[in-house]
Length: 212
Length: 261
Image 1: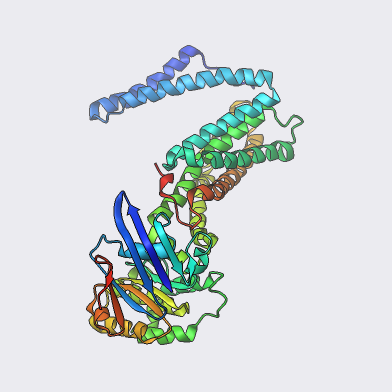
Image 2: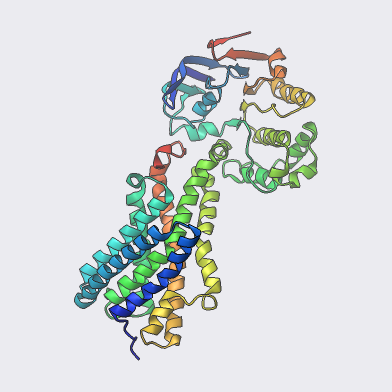
């Protein structure tokens, strides 16, 4: 479903990724491992077209990622960056603004599902009325996770989304995303909860091979 | 009632006022003397040259020459906006120049044709003087607006990319930044409009009153020019941003880093 073919990426005159090939199938749950500076986050940026200067080929559902296709590909992927920023203003306003984008406005605002997810991820409804700057890192991460789920997409790219959660919530998050067979999940994480999960395949970016 | 002329000798007497900042700078070691003298000399030379130039411009009052001179003034304004924005002139000069020209020429001609109802709409006294006021007074707003747009997207890189990944179209992603930068651009003008006449007697009014016209006429001109300034600021910021998008963003919707110095 997601194919990186012989990727070479130079960033700031430094070779970040060299001759990387990686295939991810539909429904895979993958954790990318590797020291910092190995280009873990760059992999996501490459797939989303945020980095466009590289050698090699990237395909999503057999469609090459380029300036024309990338806009449609982005709509099929739910991506959460490290230290995600939800802007300024009330949390609920931010979530609603996401659903006001023309492409997302086709579905009615999933109020009921949002309430269920708030409960699952142990947030209060009152938290939605707080300013996003007042929320803790963990609360912001969970709001981003909930938004990603509400968007109803099938592919998830997570960059350290469980880092600020306590052990119990880390477990719940990993369980939530690994149980759904339809979903393809790629996570960058140092959390052992991801690594211990039997459904998770681990890709070692330094050795460029699968670990388990 | 003609304006009282100032003799060259008297003008040198005005220089005496400079002894105050010079003495203060000396005593407290503010270190302003050099730049104070440099700026005064530079300003005087510029104004003398422009005075001679304008004198002939007004005498000849040639349509093409007037238009060309306004075009040169616009170019100077665009350069100072680009310098203030820390962006590369090679990338944004052409789109910015087109935007500023459209804004300035359209508004000046509108004022000359529709509002003042001149018989000769390219008259140097109106075309160049009003055009210069529009450019000069919208300069700060333009710098603030255009700089704010690109630097906040640069600063918000992660959030901007996140928005794109959430399914925002390119226009949807830039819209909040566009709104914010236009608000910022208009702030100084709106603030000066609010105190106008009470705190400051604006240059346009001062000029017209000293020129011997009644305050009633001066006020009408001032109201007209302020409306022109607000409009030209908003139009030039808006157009410049829209027209530079193509050079400043990749086809992937990502801000090019090489547009900054």
